[in-house]
Length: 289
Image (cartoon, rainbow, N blue to C red):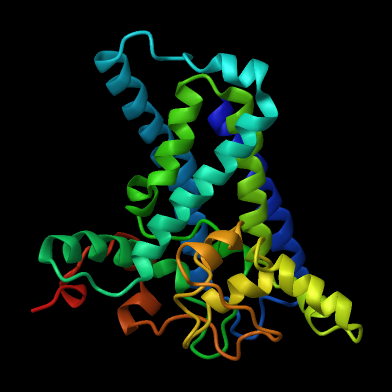
């Protein structure tokens, strides 16, 4: 098992335990998750771990070895001598790059047709992530953390950034930064809305402190708002650092209750076919005619 596999196993292990807990506590019943939801979560996770992430790492390694001989491990000195500043910089930069890609998948359609075509790929690839159980009964759950279309793990720039750092020798930085990011992303997809306790606390200073923290860090209910059907579905595009939603993307939305309805509407074919959800490449609906 290489380091890339170890990182994947660590995050997937957490997701598995959280999914078991949500299932055992009844939080995935009554239409919250359908059989198709479970199947596509398994399919996308296996594809990501077995094929997509190793493929991206192989492309990076092969390309840079040809173009820049000796580049492998060239930044290992940062990992060894300046670990904490480097891991903090890695985490913040990776989250910014992820937020930008995610924002592009949700923002208004660009004017230029070439940009529309690129965005269409992002939108369609990200679409399965926003399906939630039966219509008007589904909710976001931890198994949606990695659920996306087959192209998502190949087109999101932060995934390339992560594995580029690994290739350049930032081994421990990659390990700790990526695991921390993955675990936080998994926890914001659970139905553990503990932040609402503080947002609605009877003491004003607790509510104000939580409000301030929610401008810096993304908590579960904030990401639930992103999965809501309605005005907040394009908000809170950053999975860890709400600071970017607030100061850069202007997508911060802080609410004091959970969404009433989760998930995007699904076509009949999307409801019935896991393979169609995952491999659908029909971009026509996203292109301006």
